[in-house]
Amino acid sequence: MSYDIDALRKREFPWAARGEAIYFDHASTGPIPTRSRKMIAAMGEKRAEPHRLGAEDYFPVLQRARDRAARLIGANARSIALVTNTSHGVNIAARVLPYGPGDVVLSTHGEFPANVYPWMAAAQERGAEHRLLPLRGDLPDEEALMQAIERDPRVKVVALSWVSYWSGHRFDITKIGTACRERGIFFAVDAIQGLGPLMLDVKSTPIDILACGAQKWLCSPWGVGFTYVREGLIEQLVPSEVGWYAQASSGDFSKFLDYDPTWAHDARRFEVITLDFVHFAGMAESIGLFLELGPAAVAAHVRSLGDRAVAFADATPAVTLVTPREPERRAGVLAFRMADVAAASERLKAARVTHSVREGCIRLAPHFYNTMAELDQVLELLPG
Image (cartoon, rainbow, N blue to C red; front, side, top):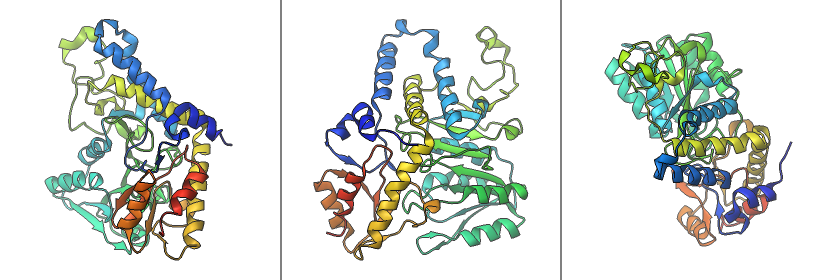
């Protein structure tokens, strides 16, 4: 299963096809494909002159975004709540999952702050312990994590990033989720660095709550994302913040003044709207592109780029790959160290290669429309 990468670049990322830049920074901000840009422009024109807006430009837009996010992860749309970013989704998990005094929320060092501070604050308020396990070198100590899950009865929540924002380390969330489910431990996943370059099916991966901003690897605008809440869990959880569309009767605009306290029976109970219809329309188009190409084909291409980077690092003593070499332990983020990281970054900038420096590493994050030729050109600049 594959797709025509040259045709994709010309159609959706023409600036890349023209060679204006080599964009390897999808772990920061993703580019917006042509189809999504056109949708955003058309919706923006209507929003600027709202007499042109029709019923189809409001709640059907949000439902389309829910539907496509659900398809991407193998979920039912009723389990999807639209949110403005990953932090919002993490806060939902930290505030609504049931844990309290003496319980442990377990995570590891090396997490992005968006998946630390919400848990830290919520645990402190509830008298729970937020525990960060130390790294083993640059990477999480997966053995210590599993031992804590299996042996410490105080662990009530495990909160992890599927893929590290800086090292590119990837957790086996199926293994971890299964261990948690067997012990009645809630499993919350920050998926922003995994979805897009990786496939996910929540029917076979035990996750209770998943948070994902769409502005990075899902190539969507800022301020859009989604949270998945396991269907069997939704109605057990009470929202910690409430919007006007969170009640079961909210869809009936003739009953606003009834003030029905019954929560929506789906994940809509966790949404705080009004949301940005324009940019959620763009998100739906971007996710639609992934669905059209096929998540498996996208994942295969990103994996092949990673394989090439591993082979390069193995053959280049001046460059150290921090990211795990095994395909099942990495996604799209590739972290490299060399003698002079700052000089390597300057070489990349001079060659119009957009990248990041994180935790003393050159972070490269190529994606589904980047070519092997681009990757080879970039890798050759690392050792100097």
